[in-house]
Length: 190
Image (tube, rainbow, N blue to C red; front, side):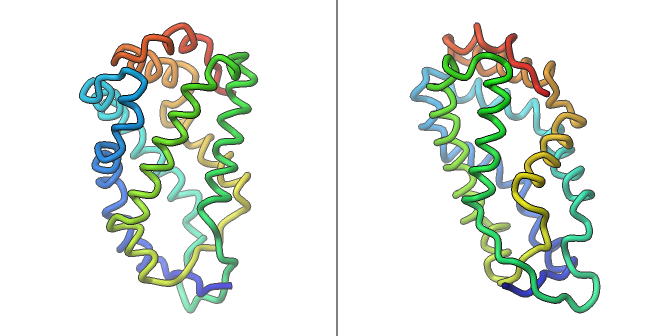
């Protein structure tokens, strides 16, 4: 158990999180370059989705508004980013399975996991991650699977629906990841 973070403390840490994403993606570009992608072109795909990524973050922040303490906080369960990552990758695999492209997407998912893990570790070391570590507190969050579904709903409502994800996928394919192109228009977000 750890002390529950105060809402003011959390606000102070969240400021640097959004800005750190692209910087971390830049540091992790070697993972995606291995697939033949032109990183500047791929980065442009992410920049195009920056507003949508911000909308997902704001949506989830709204849904989790009561996870921090507004008065004197009590104690909350200590959480581990690894279990959340596992729940997120499980959901991605289920989406690919429902879309009928899980086997064909295996190589891309492997690279995607390495890239995502690299970005997450980088952000954890960055200003927001260091800020949270320094606080030594936690949030009163739902179970990881519920958190993933909540984030998914925020993502869908923020433009990462079937059309939005296909558009991003086609953008990534256009950056030089040729073998990805035939899979993009088969993705179904449900």
